[in-house]
Length: 288
Image (cartoon, rainbow, N blue to C red; front, side, top):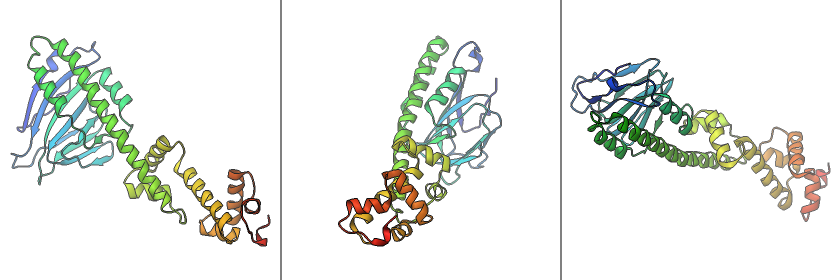
């Protein structure tokens, strides 16, 4: 089995000798890393095509984490998920060296749990308190020579608990992300903002922005944005004497023809018909 390089700052329990490939879960190593006493700053872990799954919890300090082309800045309360098959590198910030717990696992169960509980392409999760999980793992590890199978069974429950906690916290985070996207769209109803601009503002990919918004609100940001503009257009048609072309320009539609088509699709009538039906006055220029 693959072995982790153990640094002077690592305190590890090596369990690979108990490895059984027939089991759905194997716990290879449990450890604690304290880089605060290091003076050389040579703690750096780098792997390609990682042979196992690892979960690491930062208790104190901060560091740098790059995995599969994505970069993170983990700090106290962050959880790093190192997936099997990933390319990754991580090391502590010399200005605030981290202290972190970690566990290395292998088998079909951890792979399935990671795929089921965590969002695809995300590997670092902030504000997750997993201290109790690692405290319990260490306590159970003291009994390993007597009952490894019992230890693994309990470790499986703890692993599931840890990933479920991350999932629940990530769901709340996603809700906040979706709300931030909505706020940016609402603030630009009379402007023009793109998904790419929103993604850059929030530091996420456009696909991630679209996915989080759709999960929360049931439609894409583009559809929501267009619908909100058309709702405002209805208000203008009912309550102002702006012409249809002025409304289209005010709401930053590409042109009046595009606005008119979008309005008819949404409301089942033309903008001019809508004004005649619902406004107390209308401009004769608006006949369509």
